[in-house]
Structure formats: C-alpha cells, structure tokens
Image 1 (cartoon, one colour):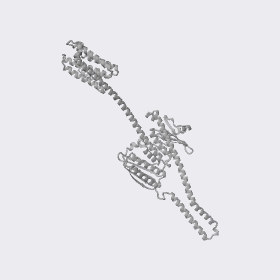
Image 2 (cartoon, rainbow, N blue to C red):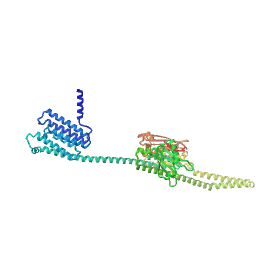
Image 3 (cartoon, helix red, strand yellow):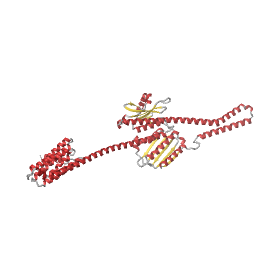
Image 4 (spheres, one colour):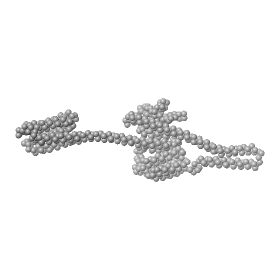
Length: 593
C-alpha cells in the first residue's frame, strides 16, 4: 500500500513538473503561468484574508493542479475551437477561484491574464469577450459575497475602478505586445523562408560553379587532347581518350564510340564500363541495327540488355564515321534528371560527337598531308638523284659500252685511260650519293632533335611558371621510334603541368635514360603530393591528365610507378621496351573490339 502511494505520488509530481521542449512563445506563456501562480500564492498566503492557513494552502494547491491540467490541454490542442473552449473553461475556473479568495480584492485576479496569453492567436473580440466575462463574474462575486459596506453596483465599480482600469490597461498592453510579437514572428518566418531560398539558391550556384569548374577542366583536357595528339598516334588511342572523357563529363558509367566499317577495315567499338562479353554483344547489336537513316538524325536512343542508351552520329560535312553513345538509365535514376536537364545532356553529347568528328577529320587531313609531304620528298630526292647521280651513272654506262665495243681496236694505253676515267666517275658518283644521304640523315649530322625539343619545352615551362627545372638525357635518341618520342613528349608535358597546377611545386626534375632494349623516364617534383591509393582507384580523383599518362604507358607496353604522399612531393617512374607498339588500346573495363 505504501509503495503504491509512493508510485502514485511520484507520477503526480512528474506530471506537475513544467513541460520541456517548448518553442519560444510557449516558454513565455508557461513561465508567466508559473511565476504569476507563485507570486499570487505568496501574496494570498501572507495576506489578511480571514481564512485558515490550511484552507489557503488547499486553495493554492487546487489552483496549481487546475492550471497544470489546463496548460496540458493547451499544449496538446491543435485546432482553434478546442483552444477557445479551454480558454472559456479556464476563465470560468479563475472566476470561481475568486469566491474563496476575496473577489476583486483577491491576489489571483492578476493570474487571470494567463488565458489572454494562451489565446493570443485569436482575434481581439474573443479576448475582450473573455475578459468581460471574467470581470463581470468578479464584479458579481464581489457585489454579492464581499460587499460588507452594502455598496451599490455603481458605487462598487467606482470603488474598484483602479483595479479594473489597471487590469484593462495591462490586458491592452499585453494585446499590443502580442500583436508586435505576431508581426515579428511573421517577419521572422519570412526571413527564414528567404534564408532557406537563399541557401537553396546558394547551393544551386555552388553546384553550378563546381559543374562549371569541372566542365572547364574537361574542356581544357579535351583541348589538350586535340592539340597534342599526333599523326603517328592511331585513331584508337585518340578515341579511347575521348570515351574516357565522355564518361567523366556526362557522369555516366558506360560510354562507347562505334566506328562504321569501310572498304579496308571492319567496324570497331571502343567502350568504357563494359565487360568483353557485353562489348562483343554491343558491337554485334550495332552492326545489325545501326541503319542508314540513323546517321541523319541528331540523336537516337535504344535499349540493350535492359539498359537505355543515348546515341548521336559522328559525322563531318563530307563523311560519316559512326556513333557515340552512353548509358542513361542509371544516371537519370540517381540524379533525377528532368526534361530540361536531359535536353542539356543530349546537347552536350552531340557536342562531344561533333568534337570526335573534328578529331577524326583532322586526323584524316593530317594523314593525307603527311602522304603528300612524303610524296613531295620522294620526288625531290628522285630529282636530286636524277640530276646528279643518274647522269653520272649514264655516262659511266656509256663509257663501259664504248669500251666493250672498241676493245679489240684500242691499245692497252687507251684502254687504261678509259678505265681510269670510268673509275673516277664512279668515285664521284659514290661521293655525291653519300653526300645526299648525309644531308637527309640527322644522326650523321650529330643533331639531337628530340633532346633539343624537350630542352626547349622545359626551359619555356620553367620561365612561364617560375619553376626550377633540371633535365638530364643519357643515350642515343635514334633508338627511340618516332611515335614513342611523341608519347614521351606528351607524358612529360602532362606530368609537368600536373606538378605545377595541382602539386604547386617549385622544383621539377626530368631524367631520361636510353639503353639498348629499354628506356627509363623519371619525373620528380617537390609539390604537396597526394594519396596515391585513392587517386588510382577513383577515376574522378585521377583526372584526365593522369588517365592520359596511363593510356600512353599502356599503348607502348610500359610500366608506370607512382610514388607520392602528403607534403612529400611526387615521383613518376616509367620503363618502356624500345620499339613496342600495341595493336589496340585497352582501357579499364573497355577497349577496342
């Protein structure tokens, strides 16, 4: 029994405790309720009312319980009708509490301002009606129960006018303050709404800025690809880099370039993000379904193995090359692309398709220009040999023929003179032929064009970027094939640019060793370094520059070692077999089929 009473008493105490987790307005209302109860109770308990102390304590406790129950209903009610009803009930209850506590002379008359605070969300007429009910009830209680002097209604009003007037003025002041609070709340909500809108706009601008920066980086990388690719580099290498760039720019998992068949070669497919089986299935599908009319459409879509693909033609003004495409279903599900964003993706993919067409067309023009240049050089060499060597050979041939025809009619002295002339002409012809060959050979002249070009580039790079560059070259550059020289030049450019742009280095060291069957390249800087594990695993962190270096290394069957760390600089080490060139370019999960 005692335990049950203890538990019940504890629950009652916990219930009567002030509520928690209130907003600012609720906290003010609750605080005034408890403070006004406490002060009014102290005045009542220490007042001159002719009631016993136990009676007063009972009244104070009853008022507290009543107030706490009403407060609980206020906090839990959500509709306006319930709050109005609770306000009327509290007003009537507070009017009744005046009966045992002295009417208008009761200290609890000031406690009656609590309904005004609790119902501040309603229009003024409700509050004034509620106030009028309370004052009328208080007046009637004072007139009938606490009118020892027998005053009339008018005399009582005049006698208690100070209390009534102060009560009304306090109520007006509270209403004005509450109206001001409402206005401030409305302004705060508006400011909050504007802040949220500004934060949303700021986030959109931030994301747009990041997107622009990424796009600018991709555009610069694409520009670098276009500007630095060589005629000696086969089309598969260029297209593999474009496929990788497309995946990063379009933020898709699968991208491809399909080159249509021509008279000399079958169709080919360069992909990223597909297995060998999927790549073979896709090229079979495209060979069968890439109809003639599709190349005249700006864009088309198709479904392959449950995934949706977007495809644009790769064509110039004079030639159709094939199609560029990407897988779209996953990207759209993850990013929630709307129609407008999807249209931008289509335009961007079309732009990349036109860029690929420009690259291929430029490659064709350069190939044709190289053939014409070779033909022109062949004609020049032929003319030079014809003008010099061929005439002497013809003279020698004529002399030998004349000597053989007149052999029996000439004496030994004449024959000896003729043979001396033929020998002299042969020597002169051999000398002129060697001179022509010597003029065409840079190795015979002792020139090192590759080394010189590399030194010139690094000197200019050092001056433009305020970087100390040290370059060392050991070996015979004639052992390096021309296409491999171009790849080494591009690797040095990419690595040097990354060292300054991302590593913020002040010193750069480039060393090249050429052996009989291999060559080694080391590029070292004193920049800030980076996490190599994360960079090599994440293609977004890796960037196009490092991807291009990896592609060039794979193209020539090289070995690439990356050494770096936070604040310890970066070292790139390469080792290539001399004269090796892969037939096709394989890239990560895709390649040329």
